[in-house]
Length: 428
Image (cartoon, rainbow, N blue to C red):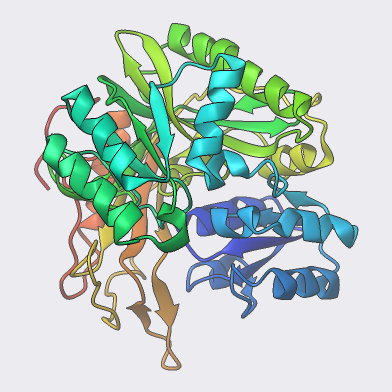
């Protein structure tokens, strides 16, 4: 197939492997920076870190990139898209100013308040004593969030008031999260069921992808500590057509209009973390990049052309791209290293990656690397996202867990109930 465009994908996780594979399958040349063992198979890797803004700009110039797709949040909040634009290079993702929707939880909450976007009641503090007085006066557990980026660990959902006050102390007095926790958001704990709602935006309009649901806890039945995500599936039944319409009308529309009115039009993907209670959606958080592991199930459930979608967003004109309701389901299981989500064990050889995959199945790399001997070994906590797409979620789950069962390494662990809110319990 003739190469039509050269695309740089920034990042090294399963999210980036999924995007790189989708772009490569469309006939485009893909360079991943820094990539992993999987992205090296669908394109080539460049040894430039995802947080090296200057290095990434130099790479894009050197490669004469037609499009740069930014995966993680850190380079977005650091202004990578702005730096690329200054060199005349088109990029998928928001500007540094617009990335504050994720980079600052206080900004996000205050933005919602200004524009009437439904979210939990909240207060912002930089003084620990004042925050503790607020929590104790409430007399019930309140969620405590570090304002800045904290590698997914800056949110505490306490079981009681004392635990909430302890979180305030760790963030504001002990500075457990450094500058990211120098200011905190304290907000009401919302009841309901969570969902991940992704909308690709061009500054004024948005194209919604399949609603997904992530599984954050490390253990079956949503037990154990929070992780970066142990699996996902799409579409999520909790996002009914009525809920979908409300999110577009009450959240996405006002967000795009508000960002434009405040002089920072939003381009890229708006990832709305939702809490849905009795059909009423409210915003838990905004992210300004694709979710991981959600991207593993968003890619196979979108029937359009991924380059067309991302490039149109980067150009600021999605008028020719239609929203496409998903016609298939997808489910992905994260296979993690021993010790995750604490200190993961690394360097273990992964067996079973060369096995033939059944129709619809996929294996996405995250924390992997290939050694000089050709063996693929573990390099991080979340090692692989293994899944499948199929006409039904049940069929996707069966195929996904079949493939998971054929891959092994010492200490590997995964959840056996991904999709549990939409499927009957299964043991694998």
